[in-house]
Amino acid sequence: MNTDGEGTSLLARAWLALAEDPAALQRVPPGGEPALTSALNVPRLARDAVAAASLAAALWTDSLLPRGGPRTVHLDAGRIATAFTSERHLRIRGESPDLWAPLSGFWEAADGWVRTHANYPHHRGRLLAALDLAAGSGPDDLAARIRSGAARDIEDRVYAAGGIAAAVRPAGRGLADWGGPSDAPPLSLTRLGPAPARFRGSPDATAAAPLRGLRILDLTRVIAGPVATRTLALLGADVLRLDSPALPEMAVQHLDTGAGKHTALLDLSLPADGRTFRRLLDGAHVVVTGYRPGALDRFGLEPAALAGERPGILLAQLSAWGGTGPWAQRRGFDSIVQAVSGIAMRESPDGVRPGVLPAQALDHTAGYLLAAGVLSALRRQQDDGGTWLLESSLAGIAAGLLQDSRPLLPRAEAGPPTVAVSAEGITTALPAVAFEDGPVDWPFPARPWGADPPEWQR
Image (tube, rainbow, N blue to C red; front, side):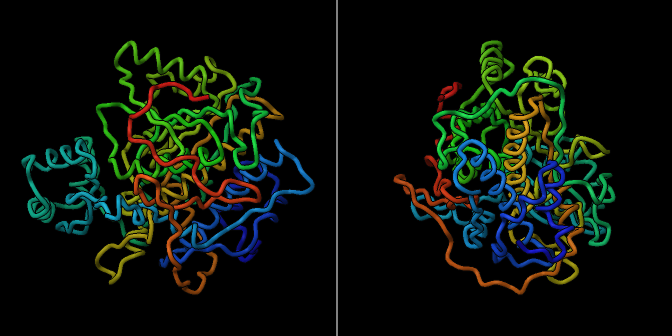
């Protein structure tokens, strides 16, 4: 594998955080950096994230289905580039859907810039209400209101109203306001208590489906969490995504990240749905959440309580800002973390207007790392048992990207996208995670959101 500046690579840092054997990194071949042009080292960020998930999958498969020698990891730059920009390649019967709402984007304030996220109706409503705008207000109304105010004041008002807006920080300031350390590991794995492993592999497992028999409760939304659970579904896990009927997912976003998973609706405020949820928890081996820390604790997902009531379970938590610090309870998305971290100004096209990374790279990276962490923790449980908590955050990924001192590679030319078209005419990206004898395509296309009963398939 490449060793230039390897001490700062995401792959090496993630492997260290998981207490994995560094010798295994020699199984990762050089290359695989996608054609994603950036002022930061996004090509290697993406390559390292996919490499971590691919290596963790190969190691799990080797432990379950040993053969003459270790399975090799495959890194395809074209597949990685397409996977990291998958929403741009999504087509519905040849048509490209619009994923961004009119009120989401950068807006010039009286003293700088503000980034808003209003793709979901409830966030749009809170943004407008916070700025005293009518429900039917459009982009021109929002632009005029933000131009009249200070960026930090707008951030505070919208946050207090439960909406999502952030003042764009200078490129050199980094994540100072976030409060997290600049050298924070990209993920962490904590033992919550002793317990026998809940899952030891299935006799029906194959190299193409090494996680067959593993039941994963998916409580995630948007991109990062769904990418993690989609990756685990690729490997054969029975993934059941649960959503509240009061918070619909954007249909096109679900099509992009829902492959290989079943999807059901539960209103946990209803006693009957609450009982169904607890039964699903009883049968789960892994629970993956993508909400703010503590947001789901009242439903029995507080880590210490989960360890006491369901020993041996693995809880994987992904959030925007992490579980500690002054921003832990704030809502956030990839675009908002880019704005706050200084990444947006590092990507500025002219030194004045903020820019963006060439992909939702923080989201996708966090998703692949979380999948790698789940696979690593499952192997740890085979030897040590235990109830485990795996954590990652978009801000932690951003901090690592800003600290990456490895030299940028020469600009690569993008090849044709690596996509597949379902029988229903849905075009989606092919998987980027790959290893010898492993799966090459999703088990099945994304199911319609909420189309399945809330029960395990296997």
